[in-house]
Length: 106
Image (cartoon, rainbow, N blue to C red; front, side):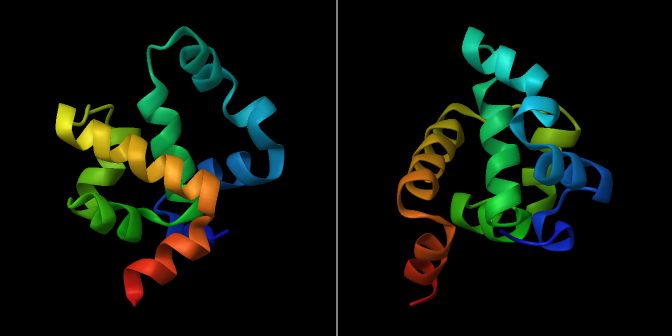
């Protein structure tokens, strides 16, 4: 897991996500996930926590600022980027963040 500076999240959001776990930090997002209305926001938060906004944005072909705006600003990615986000999230959850980053680096 990356530090809060690498994650692109503010210190408070990162602390909530890491220390309190999904039960507290992602309760609202989990309900939306379950209902199918905001899965992408939870995926963005998980990728930012695991990879960091810079790496996740680079893997998705967007800037780190644009990647952060999906969580903080509520902007929604376009359809193609949404599919890439889901694929990357699936890879990170199955293979692990380290494997994905090592594959990208070399």
